[in-house]
Length: 188
Image (cartoon, rainbow, N blue to C red):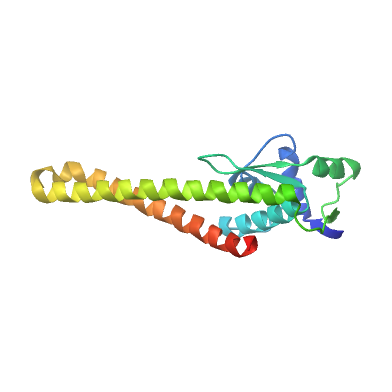
């Protein structure tokens, strides 16, 4: 077993979330609003929060729940609740250390990984399909503007919205492809 340390500034923020699910954004916002926050900008604060969340998930202190069509939510595990209940953690300088399992992934974890990859693949396919629709829509608005210049003022907002939607979808596609390419070597 290896030991991980939970940062006290994060532990203070995690306490209100013991009984309810939360997103990375909610935890980051709570961290930024706390008196113990050591970051002044959202980006480094989010990175700090997410790095610690990943460490906690590896130690089975936090669970990730994938929601179809939305951001994943996280819950604190029973193991985390037992640890925080058993220790009186009031001193802000104290690091809480937890024994984390250092074993190879189980068959269940491999199965859930393959399910996650299948879900990623499905999401990627859906985003690619939506991307083609958005690009086609933008091209059609462009053609309509060329054919009917008098309608340009009415069509321009629709065209801009379709272009913006295609750019967002392109970002989502890139993120999914990057994640899947990182997972591919691990599956071999």
